[in-house]
Image (cartoon, rainbow, N blue to C red; front, side):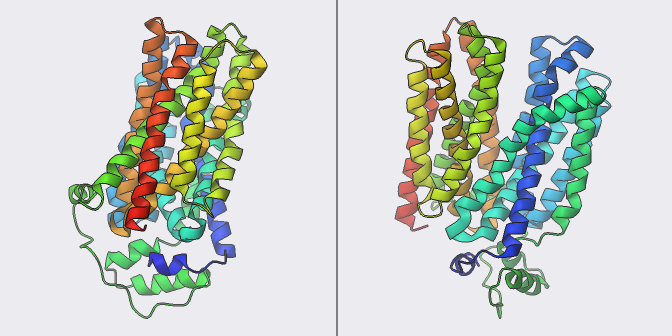
Length: 435
């Protein structure tokens, strides 16, 4: 299935429409996950929360994303990418409703965790679906456009949250997120299921559904399905075990390492940059501006890696991005800089770190065959969320231990370097295996 769809270049109107719809959905996910960061002050004021309690609330959705990506991804390989995405939307919307009516921080935590589980399932399913629809030539560009939605949603959520809080209070933020989650359910239902999944599903109507999608992609119909490579009724545990089969174990360990290391650096930058600038003696407004720049300048970084990945392997482009990120973090920690220099360096960090993340998303789907692709993506994304939790926590521990802001930037150059080495090794593995 893959090879046939990958060798027919022209991009169709259906592909463009589907990609834009999925990118908008990813934008909504960015709002669901990160809107609480902008509503944090209002929640703290309302409930009188301590910093530690607020920190747990901010992390709850990230833990949920880790669980959702790892637990729901095997399900996506068994019942379909589309249906797991719908389940994820239902969970995400339900979690937002719980958060909106939460009478206490404990109930808010439950709601945020449920939302994270749903978003984790959505990201795994739709990232895989986007990659399969796009084909090999346009995979990097398509995944980049899709993933561009998440930082765009995070950036715009700051403005939306301010409007919603002015309209009512912080509960309006979560109610709005619930509404948009449920609105996207019919959008996902209207999309076709993954052709690769259908080809391996054994369903009696699989060939008809595949040919219907192929006609929308302007591809000739298939006369018969390819031979099934595996039994689709295998258990989730068996699917995970296949990631460590001899032909996949090196790829699995490399992509897991790269995701974990990069996410620890990304969420360190997202979470601590505003505070670090204050530690360096600049104003709180300057710190917040730097925090927004990371997401804003990250968008062209995502667009560029999507464009270049059309002509060069995403793993090779990502290696360059990660190496650049490493150098930038070392320079940031080298000595005291002016505010202008710091803003320029922070912007470059945002460009590199967001672009690197999308490069990994574009690299991962090609590492596995269709019957374990969502599982492979899910576990890679799930473990990366553990890095998202560890990175900010480690930064706080190091600051409490007396590390300076400059030392902190240099410390996080190390995981960026390790991710770069890991992705470079993946590039060599892809060339060896002729993926």
